[in-house]
Length: 157
Image 1 (cartoon, rainbow, N blue to C red):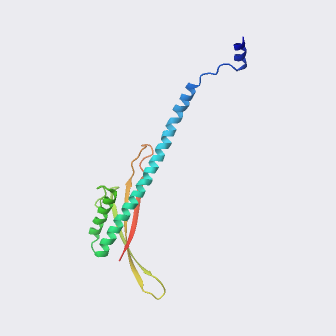
Image 2: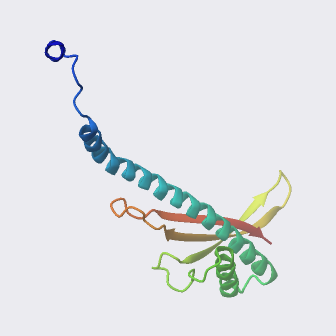
Image 3: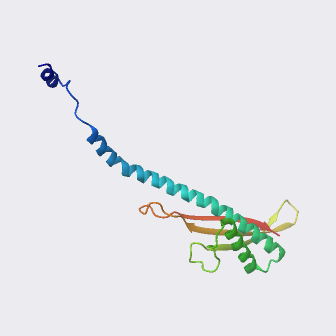
């Protein structure tokens, strides 16, 4: 009769909880997978930004060197910058012919006069800027792709 007294008092055998743990796991697993996917997608975007910034820097330096040698050959400098970007990225996907594509290498030039002090003549500073944009690979289709744009500038005279 002891077992009856224990059952009535609530000290009896515990109910099997393996089913409950399985249900909780099944409910939490999709959320964990979604959070991990978002984290990996963000990390992928950050890596792409670092890579593109480095490639844009290489392209800007190449364009500045070319324009310092011959300032009228902008198309040649642009082509050299695009080649430097592709070399830095170890790819051939970047181009400077179709600006509607996400792998377009844009080159802009600016010129400004900078005075170093009162009474001193202004110095002309030429700056070339390379801008690259690309969409990263989406690991989670629901979130979508992260568009990354990087730019770098270099001076030449």
